Length: 245
Image (cartoon, rainbow, N blue to C red):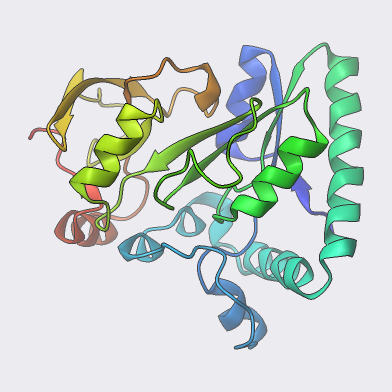
């Protein structure tokens, strides 16, 4: 069972920009419990809300039962034997780092591709100080706790649970916020958007996954990916935003 992936649609885009990106995909929210029939497994997304019904696990190859089972096994290993998990993870990441060197590419890591585990991201950033490490998170105040390493960039994912105060605090601390719009694939995102009383430029987060290359003081705009039914649910819940407003 491999833990690291370098073959994922959005991660693949970075190679055109001279970056080889490795990601770790565990089971989002409580998926591993259902797949492995283990009620003892903790959630890997402590602030998941309505997004659990529109997660990227429902898009592309992530929907396949074989992929769900692989994610669940990785998740179980993370909780059951963290020593073995990190030993294998670091071994695989060092192999990807060497591959990046051979290819003449820079090396980046997204430790939490589907999950939201700050200790995992912090450990990876500490072990690979020369790599650009980055994550999205729904956990408030991402500039605190373990997320202070200079090579670790965090974007705060706005959800229906996000308060005006939390969003403004991120902007004040130089943490960009990611906003999911109802914009269809191929359609332009709004040039600016007002959220929590802050009107900021919108950068197209679908062009590149490399959020550490973005300037601060912007919204990272992401287009909806998924079915129309789940889009309607996302808009109703408030974690997907109407781009025309």
